[in-house]
Length: 116
Ligand SMILES: [Zn+2]
Image (cartoon, rainbow, N blue to C red; front, side):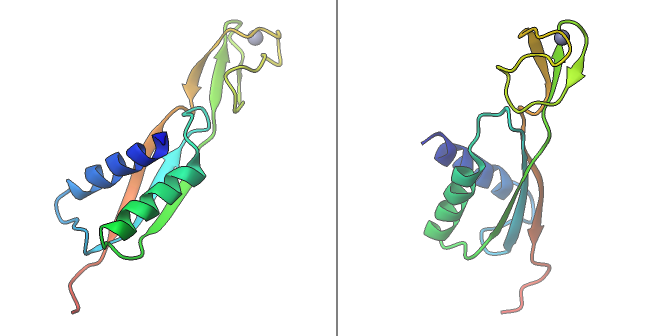
């Protein structure tokens, strides 16, 4: 499963940050473009599975779908969630992706101080 290795990468990247440990991580915010080919439900499931298995507790996962933007060869810029669509202006299928194929970790929330 593609999303499971992505989830693993995301967790590892987050834990590489100073001050973030498996014990103080509260929530993760991710933005994901519709053209990234990532199934956000699977990604969220993967993150929850990995964090639970490694005893990291109940971490809130917030995945936001960012808008997609395509630019047609005619210069028309439009929103669409598929690269295989046609331009609403000239019907061409030749366009490039301006936005929407990204997968970013927007922010993480950690617990301020240990209150054990
Ligand atoms: Zn066009």
